[in-house]
Length: 204
Image (cartoon, rainbow, N blue to C red; front, side, top):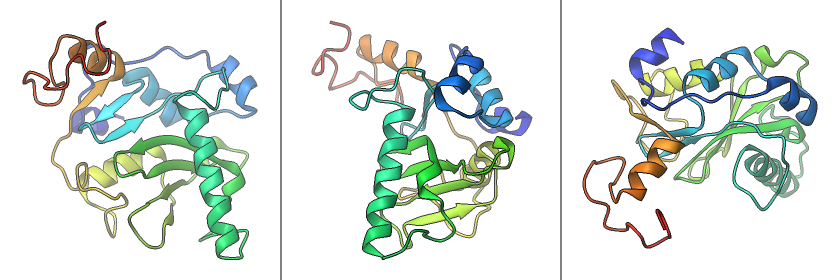
């Protein structure tokens, strides 16, 4: 986590408090320790206005944004791809046990393969919409995957856009901070006046 904090300093209002006992009971499993530390230090937010990082909730509603919705999207996308390719497993991915922890502006979904009993051993699985093969498995934890992506250490960019690939440093904004800036009419990623301020009810 120390290296991640150096490469991607949290915004001033970052970090979320999660009742992990309640979350574990609701989801039926725990979550990796590095991810739990990430939530404590960063929480729910975005990187470079491109990659959104999610936190779990105990309210499961498919019509809402968040980890549960994106997990359902990932599993459904895997199922559709598996049916198309006439296979139950794509590149070593257990699609029925995917848990999404991130999404990006390229419509990619970043997940864990949560089929193992030990969350700390879960590999990262990425659905890359604009790449082939669409599904890639990485034997890395969530924070190591982020660091490897930011540093460009993987064999290729795992995402559909280059916004967070091979960057010396990246900016993280907690969702609260991003929302507050937009409510003030400020583009949170440039600091300039937001030309779309007020168009979607922010600050109303």
